[in-house]
Amino acid sequence: MPYVNIRITREGATPEQKAALIQGVTQLLVDILGKNPATTVVTIDEVETDNWGVGGETITARRKRGA
Image 1 (spheres, one colour):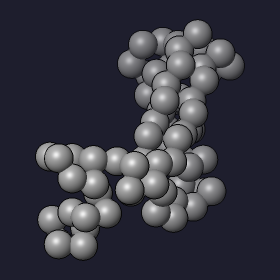
Image 2 (cartoon, one colour; image 1 turned 90 degrees about the vertical axis):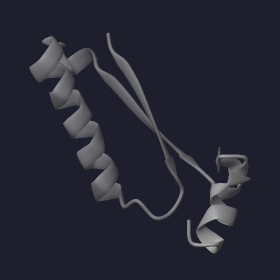
Image 3 (spheres, helix red, strand yellow; image 1 turned 90 degrees about the horizontal axis):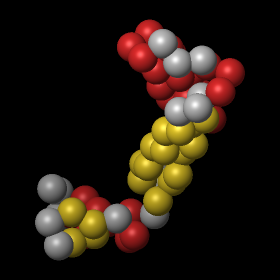
Image 4 (cartoon, helix red, strand yellow; image 1 turned 60 degrees about the vertical axis):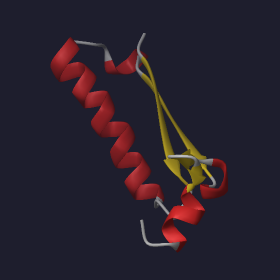
């Protein structure tokens, strides 16, 4: 039973986009690894940009300075 956890910043991914991610990742596991889609679990965690850091600074700060 595969379990895939996708983490994205909380910036307005639509329900349709999330559904497409879940379907696409599930299909990828079927196509590449032969996994059963009925037992494949995909979760999406949305993280506030203040709670996600790269290179010692938050994503919020990086975006404000245009990085």
